[in-house]
Image 1 (cartoon, each protein chain N blue to C red):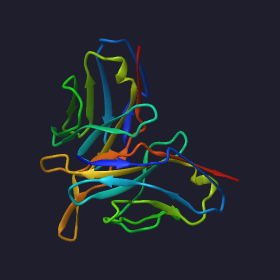
Image 2 (image 1 turned 90 degrees about the vertical axis):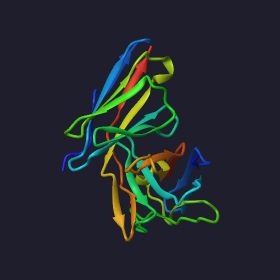
Image 3 (image 1 turned 90 degrees about the horizontal axis):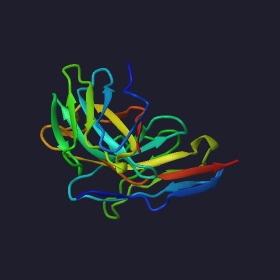
Length: 120
Length: 113
């Protein structure tokens, strides 16, 4: 079983530039979620992709966008970078849900190592 | 809106002492709660989730809906438990999928020899 991988590991950009971060989901997982983790904070949900469509979004502006591909890998794109975008970006993969008894429940999310983005 | 609060940013204990990491949540629906752990230079990984009701590495957590808490406990802390711990709540991200995680700010646990 292959775990979640992310690339690149580190990235330095300047204000106004655009960046693309990549994530390969764990084998068998068709759902990918992206999180932003600022220094000293817990991860914050950006959005989730399921069956190549955005399926839920957090409080992030439209300049944060994403894609999911048929092989379930995903990209996070950020346009017009701002200094506050400097953070660790985490990708997590899962299946959409698991059935427990008569209820569908959230499946466990498995996280990648993250991409450290620095905006100067 | 959902919210997760971890009131302690830092927690220090000695080896062999009991440890409790606090987590409180607010959520209008039926919550699903998790504890994630991040050891030094490692990725975020699941420690336990409340529906499993299992003990991982000696840690347990009980969901108390009355107090809206999901505190993490271990009776005898070990040095290898030193890590960052995050409490997280899962809510519906929309559509047919689930699993938007709302995280607390985390607690750094240090276990001294």
